[in-house]
Every structure is written in C-alpha cells, then in structure tokens.
Amino acid sequence: MEKEIDEQKALEELEKGYEEAEKLLRNEDKLEKFLQRLEKKLKIIPIAGDKLAVVPVMVSLLKNYVKKEYTDIPIGTIIAIISALTYFVSPIDLVPDSIPVLGYFDDAAVVAACWKLVQSDVDEYVEWRKENGKELEV
Image (cartoon, rainbow, N blue to C red; front, side):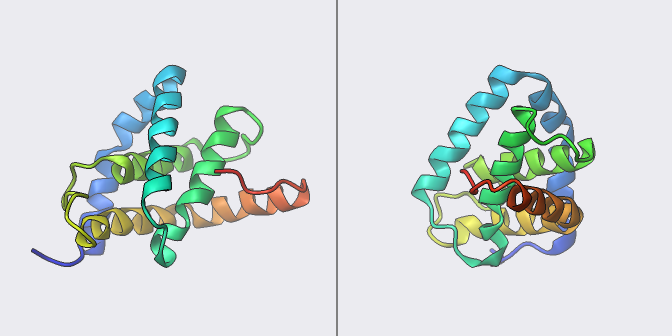
C-alpha cells in the first residue's frame, strides 16, 4: 500500500465529490448533520501537519457561509471545500481511517488538493475575520 496518494489521484477524489457536495449544500438539515459529524471527527483526531491544519479554517468558512455571515466567495470554492471535508469525514475512502497513522494520509492529500484550488479565497475569508474581530470558531 502506498504511504501517500499522488496529487492527481487526490484531485480526482476531490472532483468525485463535487456532485454530492452540491446536493449537501442544497439540503440544510443534511448539511447541519454533516457539520456535526465533522466536528465530532475533529475532536477525536489530531490536526497535525500543514495539510490538515487548514481543516478548521475550512469548517469555519463553511459555517459562516451557511449562516449567511460570509457569502462573498465563489460557489465553486464552497463546493470544493464541502467535497474535501466529506472525503475527510468519511471512514471509508482510499485508505480506511481505521488503519493507524496511514488512514489519514489520503485525507490529507485530498485536503491539500482542495487547498491548492481555494487558498486565495480562504485567505480573503481569514482577512475578513480579522477585519471584523472574529475569533476562529470550529
């Protein structure tokens, strides 16, 4: 088993989730349940390394978007973030999360692929938070 998935495979996995992400975005109840599952997972796994360190910022952005507090962001960015976070929260993916240590390498690769696509938009969100004196919430 490969220790890490390559960048192209990570991007493919991210893009596979776009349709499901769009459906999730249109259903507030399912989106809220998804956010609850995501928060639960964030509490039980360490967010180590720079690839997964961006997950709490993505979650915060998504929450602010859902609450309509921050909507100055392309819908494609929101869909990519939901897709990456859906992959992250799923225990069944390329490398099952139940495999100690290795189980999160594919999650990190998919999150990193998403980050490359959305970083400038997320940076604008972080700047907006700073300008509005908002602490990061996860």
